[in-house]
Image (cartoon, rainbow, N blue to C red):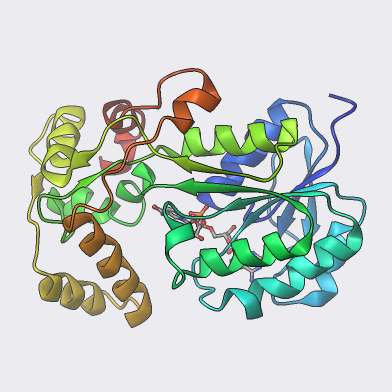
Amino acid sequence: MTNTPRILVTGATGNVGSAILALLVAAGAPVLAAVRSEDTKVPSGAKAVRFDFLDPGTFTAFQGVERVFLMRPPAMGNARRDLGPAIAAMKAAGVQQVVFLSLLGAERNPVVPHRAVEQLLLESGMDWVFLRPSFFMQNLSTTHRDDIKDRNDVFVPAGKGRTSFIDVRDLAAVGAKALLEGHRNVAYPLTGDEALSYAEVAHELSLALNRTITYSDPSALRFYRAWRERGQPRAFVLVMLAIYTTAKLGLAAKITDDTRRLLGRPAITFRQFAQDERQAWI
Ligand SMILES: NC(=O)c1ccc[n+]([C@@H]2O[C@H](COP(=O)([O-])OP(=O)(O)OC[C@H]3O[C@@H](n4cnc5c(N)ncnc54)[C@H](OP(=O)(O)O)[C@@H]3O)[C@@H](O)[C@H]2O)c1
């Protein structure tokens, strides 16, 4: 793809960034993997460039870049302070399009840092694409992996609420498409094609693993205490609690057809995800 403009991917070692990077490399696009540490291994076909949101000395990474995949590292709660300078540097360097990993419903939620990043991009004058995904299926094989692997339990306080999980592979496919095709000034609410309760999630995991996985649906207090005892920071546990309370209230069940429409095929099902990732829980 010789005419594709140069694309820089932030969060290149993360769940979504690494998947987007792989797709861009496979498409033959000229890609820079923005990484904090010089010795990070990146896929062959991509070039590593040092970048840290909190170190303006690394913002030279944007020189000669036309399009950027931007994500907000989960620890960054103050988006204007932590991401604002990098967004200003993109603009100054001549970046034309930013594809930002936001959050489903961010447009109605002024409290989440994702909305502040969206505002910064809207004000910047650069073309923007907001990927607004629902909850990642991969949270079950990363954050909650040990509960399932070691204790055969899905330990989240979500009651009977349903969640329209998305597979990160679908999210990355939409992100790569938006970058490669240069989509402009559009927001994509991205979900799977189905909304599952956590009892159904446990059932699907039981089928994939051929052993019984339970859903213990702890109280908010029990969940909070258990995660604090595991040494997790208060802010992180409170964010998880807020997310699962939202699901419990039935506010995470919305299904959109954008994933299917943009990819021209059905979204990856939770059943498929559980099969593909079963090694994580064995
Ligand atoms: N999980 C979900 O269900 C969900 C749903 C919707 C939206 N989201 C949003 O998705 C985003 C997280 O995406 P993800 O899961 O792909 O991330 P992730 O796997 O947690 O990876 C975080 C990335 O941020 C990089 N990073 C951390 N601090 C940095 C800094 N100071 N400068 C530059 N890079 C830095 C890390 O690089 P190192 O390797 O150097 O640490 C890593 O590549 C969050 O904003 C989250 O709110 C998540």
